[in-house]
Length: 345
Image (tube, rainbow, N blue to C red; front, top):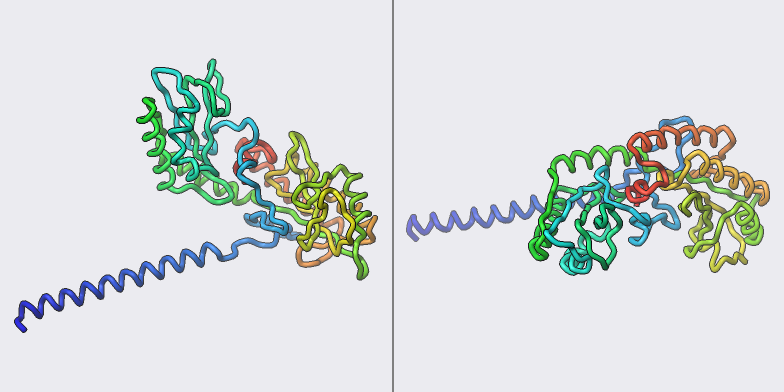
């Protein structure tokens, strides 16, 4: 074998080793990212007594406080530059909504959870219906929600999809600077992280036993709670938004069809703080019902670790919620309002 052949063989071996090394590095990187994605980051859902406010807490309780795609946007929601990356479409003629949505169809599933559209007619903006003609259309991609912060690649993909759409329908698009939107999104994500809190109170029997379902239903309904389709009872506030939930601590349906024939081992009351309107009033109503349930059912109040919750502890929790409310409202995001419902979805 000649020196030239030996040289080619050596180069081939090095190339193979290089590919194997690269694949190994990529495998380790993906493994680290996967483990990080599933690593627990949050403390218990109940705010600890006498400590600083709890860090960001996803509403992952049983049953889970998740919100469907239909609940993602509050009725009448419009693109808002405080939480959205907003592009504006114009044409030399009225833009037909059905024409816009037909051209948007290939991208609709990709951005369904974050995209929001509005149409301008007679100088006013409104949520974009499926039919009608509009002098302009605003297309928005939400920068932050409970699934995380939009990244640069997603933002670029959204803008490119709208630019392609405009080429198809003969419109022009005005797109703001992406870097400014991403910087705004990062700042907003930090604020949401501090405010993403859920308060949970459990009612358990004072002595071994179970709570009669009929008595639970009586107390809940006398407090104004309504049975929901997911087996939980809920108290609604202004605009029919939820203040807090009452459900079986085990996760079993508490109110199937509005009836409660069986007994219950323990009860849970949960308030999703940024989604609940009038923070202090909602928390006050929840603690009042917790006390009423404990009194009527001969139970006691405990936290997630079954530690007793007395009056002093409940007052301390309420006081810790005030800075959360103030921080959100300082950004123009009222708890339970349209922007909060979009951000914390």
